[in-house]
Length: 195
Image 1 (cartoon, one colour):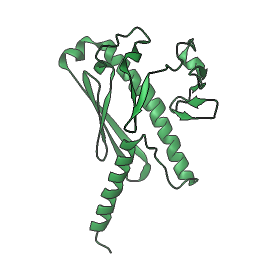
Image 2: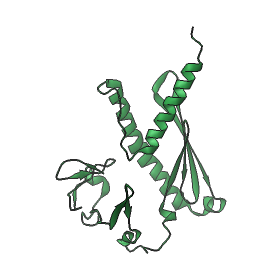
Image 3: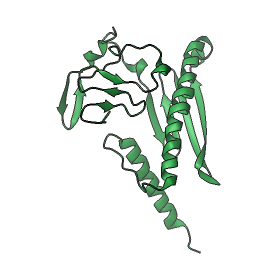
Image 4: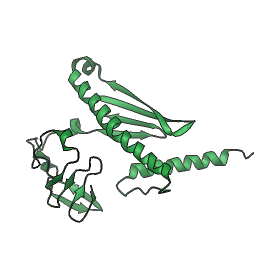
């Protein structure tokens, strides 16, 4: 979350706005979400403390919706790993997704993206609702939101209004990727014989 004004905060992806007390203030494209109770989607106050420069949240706070606070959160977590330079590996409990992206040589603003899914054999045929839900996430979230945001960013770069991007401290993965990319391109340029 980032401050939108002194009176509200905005979630970056969907731009939901909240009051400082956590009340849900505004939902853009509210019709897309159907009838929702603003009280049910208010931010939750979590017991937390700061130590060693990190904010630690007490896990027992996750029982707001009747969830057992002692339950293993593993089935609800998604782990994503980047394999430099162009692969993302996502582990979601019972399946892996491997995403690869290749820029087009003739137009670097366009890329070809492939996703491959590897699941447990016993889960592949028995849990069709699981796969339907996951495919809905891929098509609606990744294609409908992430790629749309990426296209918008590329349009902004092409306009030349800002020649650089500043990544926040909470984005170490993106920082690492760009440092690695810079280092790889620098080494490659140094090895290229001059004409």
